[in-house]
Amino acid sequence: MRNTKPITILGETILAGESKTIDMEIAKLHNSAKLKIPIIVQRSKIDGPVVLFSAGIHGDICIPIINMFGFINQSRQFPDGRDLNRVFPGSKKGSLASQFAYHILTEIMPVVDYAVDFHAGGAGRFNAPQIRLEPNNEALKILADVFNAPFTLYSKNIAGSFRNASQKSNVKMLLFEGGKSLDINDDIANTGLEGVKRFLDHLDMLNPKHNTSKSKENSIFIEKSTWIRANHSGLLHNLNSIGTFVKKGMVLATITDPFGKFERKVKAPNDGYIINANHSPIVYQGDAIYHISKTLVNGNH
Image (tube, rainbow, N blue to C red; front, side, top):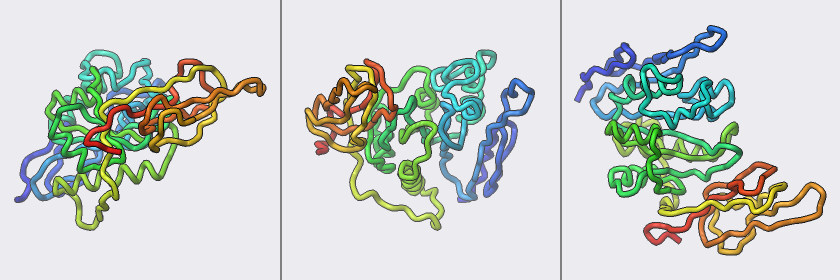
């Protein structure tokens, strides 16, 4: 059936079969230079759902970029010091971050049915590729199965987050976490890309010229997880266990001082998968250095 339903974003109409880039400009830089966020729209001639793919809400991962201010400054925050992913639904006359959140929800999300929001670990922490979704949501569980990232983590929506606001707007959103900020990783990017193609194919929206590949293994669903924190300050020597299954008591890393006077082992507190690892060379006592699964779903492993 031909798509005749009008789609209008920021006052611009996208016709059936049309591709258009719409620039979202809310504020300028401090030197009066314009700062535009491109919204790339590719519309089919055939009627169907609307899917949004977004990234860079924290400003320190690659395009497409929502937080262009943070991207330019290589920072997770807006110039007003706020985390854009904690101020939704925002306010028309609030802080700069709040105004951006408001315009995203009022100008873009009303036309969206599904969304995948891409994130990376901050502060030097590397995430194994994973989908995050709220518990007890069967519609999202089906989409997570389709995306089939190596890991799927159940996590509650955080107040003020884009994901939480999207749910309240009746948009079915998956959150993809993978890699770390200020870093380019081809394996993580390809994992996300293949998941996106499976996602679109499920919705009958994928161009036939784009082949989809099924993952060799089903996603590992994690119901509960915990952080392992450094018991000492020092130099962190990571033994590269990210994404692997470890047994209780296995050595994951060592922490040493710069002078060779001590060495402390970091051991797994329980059996589980390492889904995040701190890649910082220096850690302080109490720093989060590993994220490990505690409870798996569907009898995985």
